[in-house]
Image 1 (tube, rainbow, N blue to C red):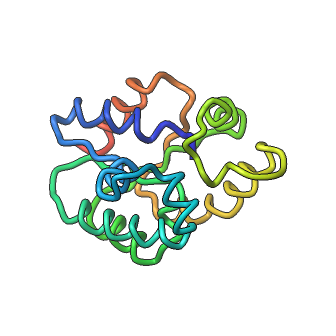
Image 2: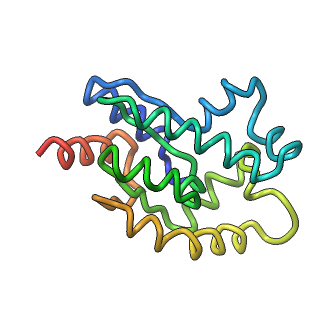
Length: 159
């Protein structure tokens, strides 16, 4: 979460001359409402069901770049779709980077609620990092300009 997936993914798609999709934006387009509304009305389970369907559809396309939501990997179905249909790049971001990005962004329902933002981010990272690491074909530490990270990924995936 807040690692720059959408920004880096858009840069990567341009470099590779491919179509770019952000699964969260596709969920919103299909639902006609934003993710926060889905979480408020349907809960996380309702959102994850929608997300699974979108990821299954998008990973069936070939020659695309896909940025998935940070929690998509919690679903067995989504993990299978992601891992079996493409190259997986884990964008690793420090807690400080995630904090800086998340503090300004109110579109992250998993970070809303009581408690300190840092603690919520740390808890999510602790839960998700082993899953991301096990899925990844490549892991890239963020912190450089998004265009430079996209160039690095392009080199890796076109070797």
